[in-house]
Length: 358
Image 1 (spheres, rainbow, N blue to C red):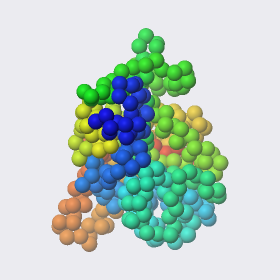
Image 2: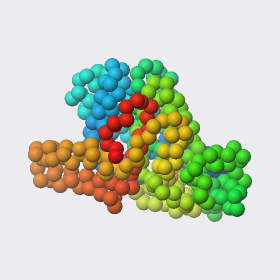
Image 3: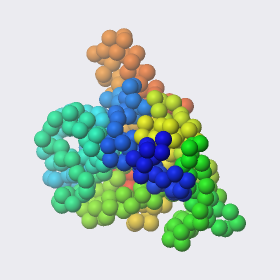
Image 4: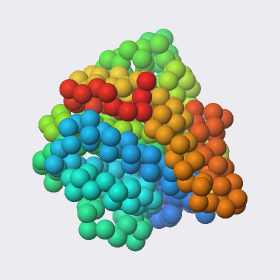
């Protein structure tokens, strides 16, 4: 066990902040969770909307095309998928875009991927000269940009803080031979200042703060402000502050106790619920406009997923119809993904009539 922790550059009996631990467990080269395994699909640890049904990706494609139209049909249009997973989403988008010649000629597609393991999986699935894999956004120099990410933000490590009698403490882990234990340390002055700057966090005693996530978004927002466009994020999360720990480890579609995580480090995904109103406040602070946050169910149904399903079923046998409506239920039902998953769109544009939102 000690050697395993050494490989992850984690020292026994030493405090390590939650986000630093997650960064090592998830992204350490070769041995971190996203760099050593295939996490998606029935044989993986979790299932994402694009791997459940192509309909999800088709409808997102239609939203992207409609957004290009709202922006005035620019001759150069940049599309960036954030954290493309196994490539399923972009693969369907490419096929969808082929049916819209003017858009297809305008669009340039970029995949922003941190994991070399996943990048190789994506390249095997998506064999198309239009696609360019990037590690930063420097090569995008002309035309508006739409960034989009499905379950992108929850995969970025978070910090956790406790507030007691107006004093802030940062949650840390200590690894020892008995397992993973929680502990606290005084929060830094910079972190306290940042936390106090967000209205939505002021009444919370337990705070999950996506410091690394906002650093990623800073780069994206800067690019949007320079070129116009926006960012669409779809993820599981909440609107009203939870005021509690939402961090969870998952392996083979089952939860793993965080105290036992030492046995599964690099083998289990570790994720959390996204605070969407915190995201909204962040974007507004950056002078972007933000559409009303909606559920995945509302977004997909407003964009016509049920009408599309009715068209497709005309050429299906009974088994295919049954499978399609089963996958639709997973995407839309309020007790499954329909309400748990939220959609937010922040943008820099004079236009405000983008589809899919209230």
